[in-house]
Length: 155
Image (cartoon, rainbow, N blue to C red):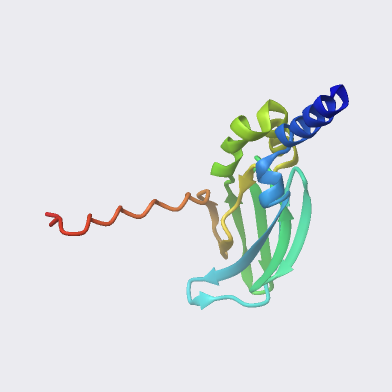
């Protein structure tokens, strides 16, 4: 009997201490980078993406996988015959991270914050050559309005 209680408590503790955001999305995030100039798209720019978790490289238009972080993602793109473009990409806290307070407790939330799993960058980053810009964090999807009840007219 005591062994069953201990086993149940251990399973419960493991489930309680599990972080939600890290299980659902992990520490890494794919991002696409494109570069634009005054006359339109600029292909073949070499871009360096960096935050406190690492540095990644991509040639535009292209994609790479970065490690999520609370810190901004700095993107520097260069190409011959163009002025460099610099973008500061803001991260946002994913709504799933708040679920850790309920399901993962303080430890689960701390793990997701520490590893970066609690944060997101926009999936598409557009760098304007010759300019320095700040790209706003991704916004959570808005909830769709509730449909009107059958047989009830809405105004």
